[in-house]
Length: 173
Image (cartoon, rainbow, N blue to C red; front, top):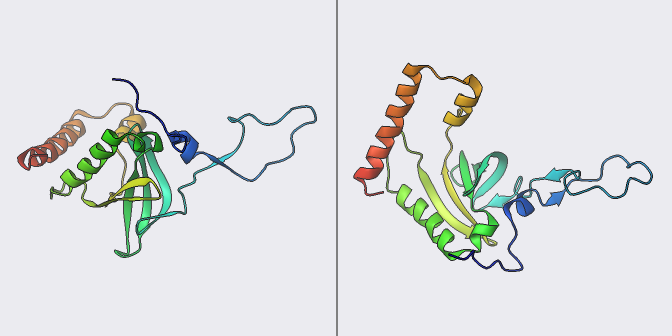
């Protein structure tokens, strides 16, 4: 299938997340020319921004289907996680539908091994999902940190994931 058409207003994930440049640094040597895009300091345009009822305070991680931020939910007065759909995907109607379906399906689940989803919305063309924030490391971080995970710990992690998947399957998710 051909790639979705990108509107003039749509920007790539990197253009939005890392799009604003920080204040200028020390002067560059004479004759060095302007800094390249990779040399310019970058700031995250979502940090400090309010999305829905959440003030975003920290970037937790980023992947192909979005970035996840830690934030403070003003009405709930609790720390939550917010997943933001990349702008390039937000221009694709099917990707937006998939993103919204993810949130609606996950809200059906109540299980200790599945993150609770609280809300889904769009604000200023930014699609977001508000979910439970879980303190700790991801399995990926754990593997990177230890390089080799003991068999007992691997089995425990696999069992917890399987229980969460079993609950999702039982609810038709």
